[in-house]
Image 1 (tube, rainbow, N blue to C red):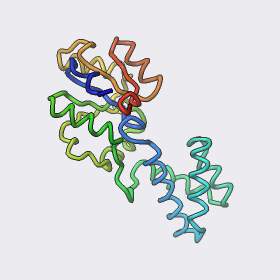
Image 2 (image 1 turned 60 degrees about the vertical axis):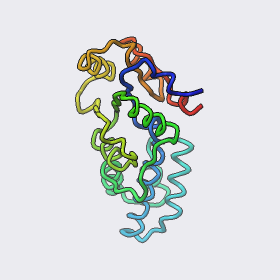
Image 3 (image 1 turned 60 degrees about the horizontal axis):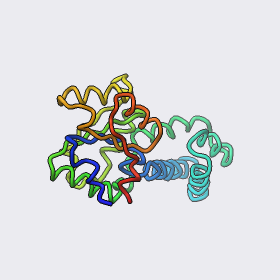
Image 4 (image 1 turned 45 degrees about the vertical axis):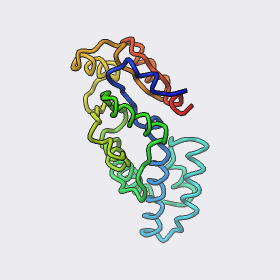
Length: 202
């Protein structure tokens, strides 16, 4: 099924960032790698077991308490929590973040057909901007308009509505592409059409 059929009658498309444009884990696993390398350098603890532990813990249980679990496992001083958190915000990644292939093709098709592209992203604005700066956009970056919900202090629904108002559009002239129930709920609050990003991969 051609994903473009979702937007033939739309004027703009709004995306979330994590797990919509690229896998969030591609960022986090590189942060964990850099942290383990930092610990190896400062504390002379072998990085490889730390990397393996963090990756397994993340994949099995998510990010909650990951530093504390790792610190306990390897005897890492609590003071390094600061470095761990800071890396999440400003890590210089060894590898660029790559868009999902089908999303890249979809966005390129949007540009060719003069559809506007917006990113409305939740989470720490500094961290989200760091991800954006280190993504391989393949030239798409000049066509993106980005909003950070935490920076604006507004809900996604409010930002969606402002985007519509600023472009003199009705909800049925736009589409939201998200990856979770929250994005869907926020879209429904103002009657915006919504699809899960996985639909574009079919």
